[in-house]
Length: 349
Image 1 (cartoon, rainbow, N blue to C red):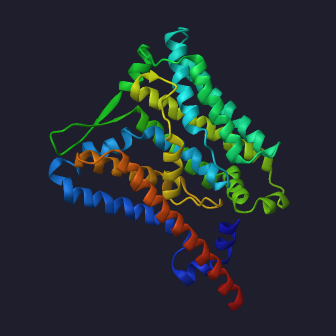
Image 2 (cartoon, rainbow, N blue to C red):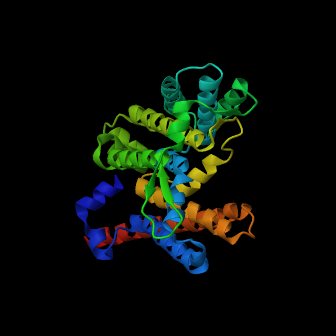
Image 3 (spheres, rainbow, N blue to C red):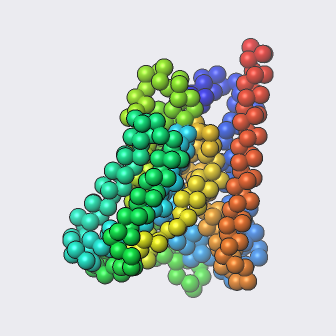
């Protein structure tokens, strides 16, 4: 809603030179470039700036990126989803158990896994809209249900040996690289790119996407405008359930295993990456491309720790926490500046 008004008036953008709502996302891009440059200065001689290292920013975290696209839409709508890690873990377990124990066709199991994720997402969306259960509680229910179902299926890790799934997981394309170290991108990176492109198209070019922005900006106004809020609400969580299940499939390609303890805490990594990427927790503002840079910042932090060698992996959590605090503060400042600029514009008009 607010974005549409700004486009119509254009006054705020002309007066300030840039839409203030883009500041968090632009800050994320600037932070990534700065962090990558610093890494090059500190560890350039060890290959930090090599094509191989850059490619691993995507290959190692493509599953997080896929989940972040769905989470971006959820947070734009003013909601939250705590179940993404558990749904992804359930996907790995279902895929492994179905192909290795039940001996079902792997293509069939992929379809079943994705449909299960969508069904769980739709169920949580219905709880939120029909029964007015807060998103935090609704998705907490989904988190417990999916994680518990993992251990009902099996308490052991199941190795995936299905020929098709292993072939998909090992498929990769070599990139041209100046150094001797070969650089590759795998199938997960291409799937992430497709999901990201789909997220951008949905949010920028469809009625559903515009409805999500309106819904997150002001739900009461969205109802008065006659938008199908129930369909939008359920659609948001259905799409996010699909992204969570697909993230689990990509993680299964990465580890060739299904396990109920996979991806504990993934939801926190995804939410923090989306917020760092410029999506406002209050709803109404966010960009899938911004979440891409949030994931890349997370990946660069992991690379810093990996190249340093003397730092514990727990420093990743500390660094992400500090960045999250900074970007939430930046969001609050941005919101205050937007409101102040609107008041000044109204007085002058």
